[in-house]
Image 1 (cartoon, rainbow, N blue to C red):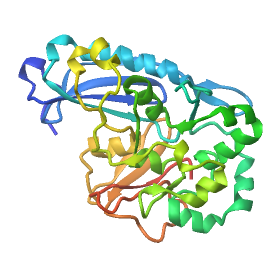
Image 2 (image 1 turned 90 degrees about the vertical axis):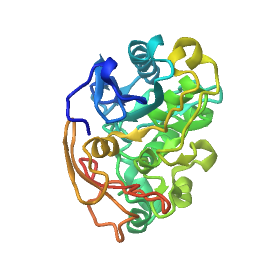
Image 3 (image 1 turned 180 degrees about the vertical axis):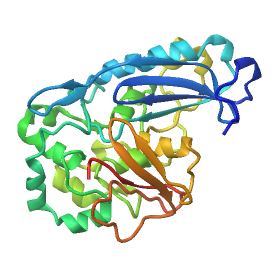
Length: 314
């Protein structure tokens, strides 16, 4: 990490990375130089979740796309062409957007805090063995994860469920809108409750229990796997980002560990924000997964790809 809180653009060490964080209260963006030091000023667009008495907690995914566009316009100025070499994105964990075949959102982004699917956790318990599922996926059956939410959506909004071609996290939806392509970083996939933490691929038993197939989900990729725009949108609106790789969306917890310098199991990071968590990056998938753990993901070929956490989601 850099020794200064920030550095002027004229003194920044190339290459630069444009990093974007979509949190519970705002979308934020900042440039970082090769030393990890923030460059210049940040840009922040406040937002709020829509909360209702029935347990609804959502945000409009298209609104977030517009917020990120505002961040890009502020930070990716034309004079930085050739200096920005990557764009990275993290979002709050565990979200769901149902998307039709034309890429249009059929639902707002349903957040981790939305509790409308709570009663459908018991439906899942009738379909799968919770202990075995926990050991494979690293997640308990809980309203914060996608299986119960998908079962709820199919039961309560069948027309929407049938029209959905894909089910994406908010970060994946943003990339699909801006780049014309998308993928799920491992940590984002881990927060779905649909990932086999031992293989780093979608868990077939949970897909079946949730009523979807793998073709309705993005491919799971390493956080370091670059994505390139498949449309002219980026180059035409932000020339400084033409040809620049983007990286798959990751969860904010994973980003918090990396940003704090906790890149292995020697350091634990405490996050105190909308929810609280303790996280440590470990090599491989812990076995067995203890009761009370949050999402755990593992890709055998990835160093420190697993995130173990204790969260309000259980």
